[in-house]
Image (tube, rainbow over all chains, first blue to last red):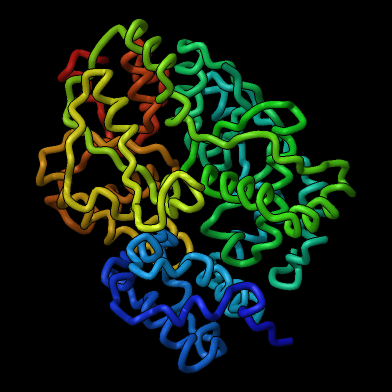
Length: 153
Length: 297
């Protein structure tokens, strides 16, 4: 099923973009890696529709630092646009492996890190064992919001 | 003064020294902390990008736990504060999102009410009464040139982190960490590209080397100002600088490394804690020589 992002993000907000490229000029990811960059992302959304964009792997090359939105003279909510686009991309299977593994771990354990011989390490710093995560509640919430449509867990 | 301490995942599991330092500093400065069985925040860099609804609902679960204990929530990480502050703000503001999330939470006997605030340990320490106590309690100064790195998610986007406080055209540049460190005798030093990202999410989600290339760029500017120590308020930024410098120095032999500290480790040292007590023994870029130079061992 194709879900268009425009249910979640107001497309009209993009019409205010005049391609000044301040966003892309300040993008740290684009400085060091082949990112799509906010300016091109917006242009493609406008000219080609969003399908072209959500199938592009370069969409994920991003620091999520939100400088683009901060610098935008038109105050376009770029961070919201990028969240909507990536949610849509992930739903179609365009998601980096590393990220998929991280989400699976989160859904299985309720944490973003593997807990391994932890009590010993914490004791070294004079700390009590960590309180257990209410994992059943976490999994139920993630199931009910249908995370498993995107990442199986 | 009492808060629910939100540890997040990286600090209690990877860098428990930050937690030990924070607990100790808070105790000395009259801040009571309560532990609750929180789950992952979840990160603005991972789950939010993949599934917004799951991200919002899980964040709401954490907020409910603090609400049920009747406590404001103090985070230790720039990512956690970003997620929990945004989710709190969004759920307070949007009736439809709150109803949707509550339908799911109610099956688990929780209900989001929207009656607490989310804050970061930096903002907690920056309160007048805490600073007055710090001035009285500090036993030594740390005369070092320090560079602060705040972590993007601590202050961006301002519409999320400072809702209603800024006009549309205003941008926000944080200063609290610089001010706080000057109180313990450090010399906060400005450097070019101070508000450039550390590159951590880039490394975590796509390309590790590209992430470290950003660290290298930041370090160039940091060294230009002869900065001797870095201070951060986020475990991901910390890892990026601490491990990043080790990885970079394998490739670039002449790289001069700058020891990185978590804010409460530096405050802890000024309150008389030892380097080991604040967990400096597990840092990869060693600070032993630097601290011995100012009489701390």
